[in-house]
Length: 273
Image 1 (tube, rainbow, N blue to C red):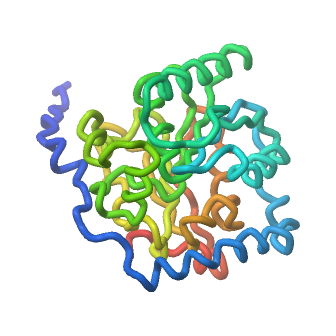
Image 2: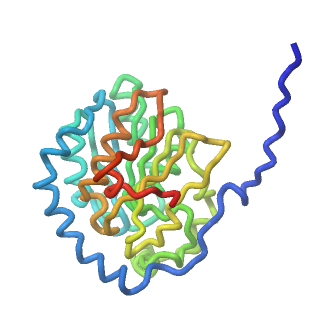
């Protein structure tokens, strides 16, 4: 029998992990961020449908908040996931004021503790905006502890100035946004199933910076588009359903998100269009 010859992977890091260097969202999209309270308000009428999302197997989930936000901002998401049978916790580090000494170490310790407390069951990590950067980097550091990563409006593939939050980042962290990204290969996906949930109507982050490129190094990556604001994506009913759907997959049996026909096709536009 003739052995099958597999050609070498000649794809370079630059080819797979291109960065978006464009401008941040314009004034019109930024103004649309004021719809975030309506997205939260939509949870009540959407609740009966959200209760029909698949339930999980009880494994631990940690949710990381966005820039300048605390665990209070992720409470609606965490409460919802609690109804879906997950052991959910916040990041327990107060407000997220950007990368600073001890943050990643404390988060690593939290993931390890959750892994051991669950009987060595892997932990799913969810990150909103900047919180998604922590989730992705933690999964790269400790893939043996992490089951999957889900990010919400996270600009892992965008240049620092492609967001409208870079001035706030500089103010809260005391550092330039250019000080940190070069220390990590942010666009590279973690070696675990990874989902990026994003919106083309995001008024803070250029949506192109939340797109994962197809990768031979990790084929279990995907992009899910929703219609949401940046400030409301973590409370948006369609985003919450997608999160629950992704978490409910059996470990080791990952499949891409199935966009539904009809109204589901409107709630989840084709990201490849």
